Length: 377
Image (cartoon, one colour):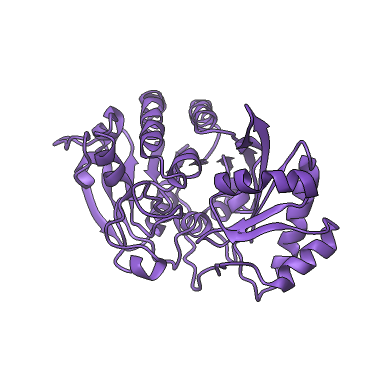
């Protein structure tokens, strides 16, 4: 029985798409190459063996004449630079229209949110870094108990609360209400995100394991639906379940860190009972890309590479591994938002010949190759 695993290193872009200026970026954006240069080079021997250094000049990553994987670059065909758009395209769904973004949410949304939740008021309603806004508004949140609402250059409605003040289940309830309000077709917002935090060592600190995304459902069937529809099993690891609203997923493993996601992926590969494993490793984006922490980003990639040293030997002749990303978030670029970038792709199987597959016009390459591997129409 053939199996496949997709590992998405969240936001690990590899160069701006030519239309980057339309998204507030420019052609200098290159998450992987720029962070490698800024930090003195990457130490990733397993990614190097697969052929990562053959894709572009990445400081610290050598080219190899004998790459173990097919290697190349994928361009995003959909309009956008957000998590949902990237993952949906990986799963074969190209968005015809981009999700909407906001500098601030209209009074109509906020007033209805306050009315339906009974929260009596909100704080924020601005584009902001999640770590900074909770530091700035925590004292007022503590005093008023109003939720902190903010957005970014992405299509997100984020709600942050101190869960020692507002219970976690209440936060989730408020997010579900927001999702219902925003499901009115005119708003076009991709995700409502619960951003719980606590005061740890005197500082407001987000609790990643309790984060929850409330996405719009995919408008059409994806690779995951195709796999399940053929009687096969799909395992979601990390926030994949939220991104696809549990559509086409047989079982899900939530994670609070890349380490948890990598360990779950390794364990699941060894179990040999899943037809498709779909993993998102979010720390690169959430903890380091948005916070413009190039050194932290480097450490996260090197941690992934260490786990690949265990994952690769666990794969047999029936296993296909695809490593890619969903967008960029260049930690050397201005601001704190995602960057409109191409992404690397590595396709590995013990019997596949390593080769350059060039620049591909869409992330749907991943869906196509998985369907072919699993022999799905």
